[in-house]
Length: 469
Ligand SMILES: *Cc1c(COP(=O)(O)O)cnc(C)c1O
Ligand code: SF4
Image: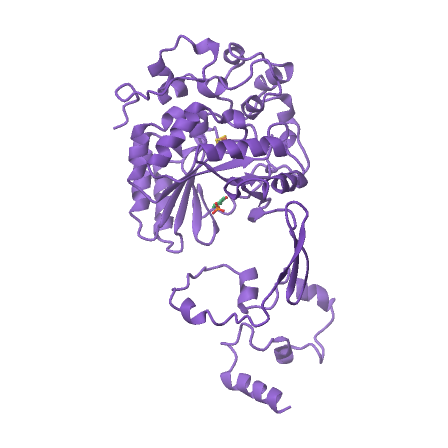
């Protein structure tokens, strides 16, 4: 089905093209394979389109540099004479990329450490991240997976796809599979089709998601054949990755129109990048342009502590300021969730301004986006148990292996202690009459967790004693 675009040309006018490529026939320019094989990656190629600075030239000539490749389409968005162009900074390296910084790591999210099978990260109870390629259409200088991305020798083999899919098949708690990489949309169309088909055949997989920057680097890839192919696997969701309003072109708009008509809900993930989009005004413009092309801002990420990204990092307070400038000031649909992906592998942690000023029983004092302060009066006769009969009609979803705050709220556990906490507090003292194994019952809170393991009579007896006292 995928025979390039010659038989099925994309007919919208070609808007975005640097003078260097003016003579390329439209069918070639709009053919994603032509774009892929004509990418720029050397100083001499880049210089035909962009006036490079010394710092850029130095970086491009360095050894061990994270891969450079830029599609002609995306290169055409770069201002050739402005070293501060926000599109340029995302894909053209500078010598600042080679400056180490405190806490930087190769795999700051500890993805490979928390991965049961190569390329599969099962960090959250009900969903997995499945890396299916290390290749991308162009390479972002701050890429969180630069440890593997760009390197064709690191890419995943057929055997590894099989192992990933087998793990998903054997793990019924997974209901959502997120395909990423690298970029799943640069995979051979047949291979992507095959992987989607195998995932869709697994009964417990409810939704499939694709995370891709291809629509931004290479909107011509979102052709009719692609849209027809993904429709076979609904419900399928897709997140793109736009950081600056300059990336929102008529071509991207047309690609999003085709994709949303194919029934794919589209979101956007941005990375907060110094010198690119660390501004309330730029972010506001970005989210407005996104919702105009029917793309819903999903996440705004704090830049990870990854090698090469030092000069792109901002304080976390910049992200909070941006959310402060969006929430309430513009459509709720246009406000992403700002997240810090926890170094060491804790997953995404949402961060936002404080809207709760203070609380007392029966009252919450809140402030709005303008600084208006109000009180919400809480009910005094609220019965949290009244819903239980209805709740029983919905089968609970077990979350094997998950402990934590939910257990505290469910009353299964009363506290969480750091490893070795009890030993530290015992201060090396010997077992003594007030602290011995036999009477450790006294630290068992009544009615919290471990009830099943207690003798029922013992619990009743305790209750009776309490009542008769
Ligand atoms: C981001 C991510 C997901 C998906 O998270 P959502 O908050 O559901 O979008 C899943 N697994 C890993 C490892 C991730 O990093
Ligand atoms: S498209 Fe995604 S995976 Fe590829 S280089 Fe950019 S951030 Fe990394």
